[in-house]
Amino acid sequence: MTTEHLTRPDRLGTVLAEITGDDRWTQHQTRLITGGKSNLTFELTCAAGALILRRPPTGHLLPRAHDMGREARVQRALYDTAVPVPRIVFEEREPHLLDVPFYVMEKVPGVVLRDTLPPDYAEHPGDHVALADALVDGLVALHEVDPEAVGLADYGRPEGFVPRQVRTWTRQWEASKTHDVAAVDELAARLGAYAWSEPTRPAIVHGDYRLDNCVFDAADPSQLAAVLDWELSTLGDPLADLAALLFYWVQAGEPAPALTPVLTAKGNFPDRRHLVERYARGSGEDLSELDMYVAFAHFKFAGIAQGVAARVAAGQMAGQDFGDLEAEVERIAQAGLAVLEQRS
Image (cartoon, rainbow, N blue to C red; front, side, top):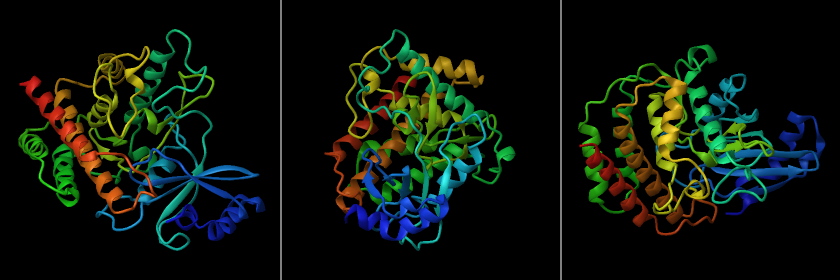
């Protein structure tokens, strides 16, 4: 399926022109932004500027997955807080223009960091640490937002959050797996049997907080310009977000992941301990059970990787291919079990 079929510029252009008051949007170009493994992200450009469109992948979707309305809602709620998010320009929750729910948001200027740094970016001593600190501070700022104050009191159920997440991702795994993987099943069983503590306070959790889901200021790497990709956001336990960030933060000498960036394994980026200490100082959270959350992050991403593999096999990812993900699922699950073994 072509980019034009997925974004329907012939239909969307008229609507964008009406919303922006600029007729130049009736004739715009679309480009798939690679890197997204779940929902599809497109850049829309014309002489008037650039916007970003988010829509689900094609084909059959798992229940409650790829909810465009939730993404748009949380970004609207956070727009006037200390958490930088793009402004929502247009949202359609009922399939009409594109035959699927979708939304359009402003394009925030800056850089998205994946496997390499842009030329001449973050080249001064201390820039890599400052960048990492900005990322952690953004997470602290998110967890400090009062959900009720921004209209998100009903955005999720923080009570019993992690046990429910374990059950949810177990169902997702069962729905998308092509064969049994003993390591995934064992990890699910051990996480399901653990007596999880309740979160100290309800918090808005991003659900997939990592380097390449953020935009950094193009001139100052110590400034976080925007947090993107809110598909998995809800109310829950803030330590789940911190654990996800640690999972994604690859250190030197570790295997390169197939689906997420390896930039942090290069140069002078700080290690995970630095991130944990920064978060602890900023949040005051008790991190004594953090290893359990890190093991859960492995289990969750094993399920995500399997879901990506299933969508690629079904031709739902606009032609993107991410290599041998079956081996990646096994590797992630084994690493999660290793975290539990080290803890015991």
